[in-house]
Picture 1 (tube, rainbow, N blue to C red):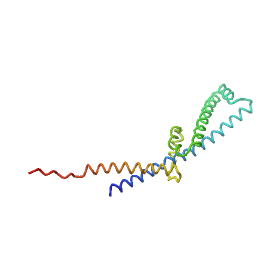
Picture 2: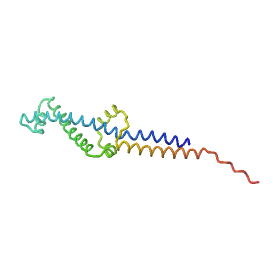
Picture 3: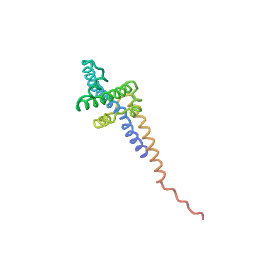
Picture 4: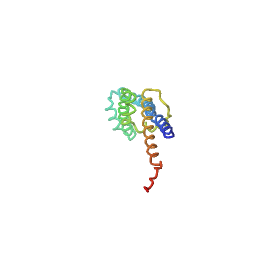
Length: 169
């Protein structure tokens, strides 16, 4: 009876822990969306400035790179902004076009380390009331219940005293 109770408690703990995967993915996606929006604004301003001077984006970067030390540094940092914007935009598009279960499972391979760290720093656990949250919760419960039940059951068998054999007279 105690073994089943502990297995049930372990299953519930694992259910709560597993249900956090879709919740973290959702919070990460929101932060990613904000970053992409802000980078898009910077890129649009740069492109507008270049267009006002009759330059393409690449020509504007080249023009900056030929300037003063500050202009060269700005050219390099703007090039990095453009690359980051493209990468994060592609990641966001992937997360938006996949279902929430897939996003929680395979979205990890696309994580931006800086955004993931900031998301984790602000992460507030919640039990999502979505199909993905329920699926992860059920999977966590079953895994926890089974694992703890097996461990405690095996431990119980090892601890139980076996009756000593009486010598034959």
